Length: 343
Ligand code: AKB
Image (cartoon, rainbow, N blue to C red; front, side, top):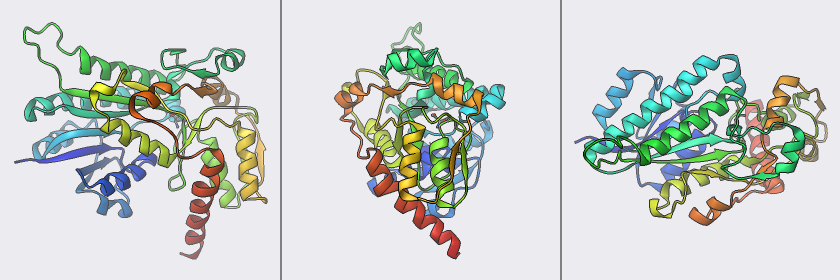
């Protein structure tokens, strides 16, 4: 008998840290963690097992399905927006082909054990593409069906994966003689910029917010690569993890769609600077926009309409901007660097 598990790819990343902790507390499924890098020591007790490797490695994925019966996949592995611009073809291969292989694996697993495989996919506000700052301001809180014209390879990849997930869930093998549903139960969230106290971001364009906070906590100057007026939606990492779990647990019949916006707060980069200075008055923060990266941020929406998520599966954030800073980010980050300085 193969052990029933939930598979988390990209487990060592920003979302993975919080998700592993949450799933361990829930105690209702064994988790196998997969990442390109060895799983952090602190995360290993939270996993039934962990392995290092590439989601594109057929051998590795073959070993996983021979050893485990996969009932849920949290597919967090991806190249983020800035990094994907430097290697767009590699980004497509990892972000889209890698996701397709995992969705197909979910389809095969569902056929093996006869139950739907819940496939949780972190899409992004990068799936949107506002053509100008005037249009961005006019659009305000965008709905899922609006402005789906991404200008980054990462955003294109996320939108493609959303459609792949919807195809496998509702239209796979639609010409077959048997009415065989794929068994893939795909669910996606278009995450805003995520701010984690526990992990440093790598290769995202929304990273200016966590980079600013972490630099201030380290006592280092920070030159922000977007304009002071730049505005996109953000969220504290605990809310992002909560949303993934809630969407994963929602009965399929409650879902009126398979891709959801969620929002929490949408400050300007200047307002984030003000919060950082309140906590770290000595912080040296300047704004030195890097035009190509700043332009990407200008194509992402000012904010999102998350009413379908609130209606279908009871979404509501626990952290607004002030609480995110005062109760989560600043105390946790300050403690982290104080421990680092004593170690
Ligand atoms: C990025 O900046 O690329 C990501 C995202 C907004 O999805 N954090």
